[in-house]
Image (cartoon, rainbow, N blue to C red):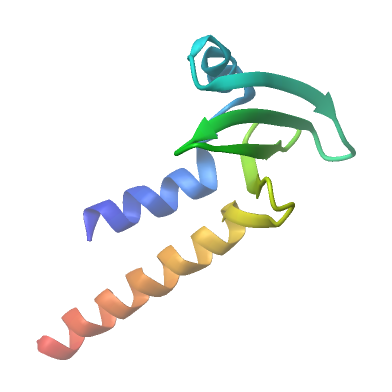
Length: 108
C-alpha cells in the first residue's frame, strides 16, 4: 500500500525523468542520436537507438516544468505507439489504490 501512495505522489509531484537525464544516453553505444526541440507544451526529445537488432525511435514529451508527460515509441515499420502517459498511469494507480483500500475495509 505504501508503494501505491509513493507512485501516486510521484505521478503528481515528481518529474519522473527530465530532458537532462536523457542526454547521457547519447554516450551509449546503441544510441544513434538524441535531439531536442520545443513544441507548444514544452521540450520534446527524440532518440534513436538499437534494440534487439531493430532501430527504434523514442519521443519523450515534457511539460513547461520539464516533467515527463508522454513517451512514444516508433519501430522501423513506422508504427508509433504510446508507451507512457502520466495521466493514464495516475488513473491506474488511483484505481489500484482504491481497490486495495476497499479490499482492506471489506476484510474488517
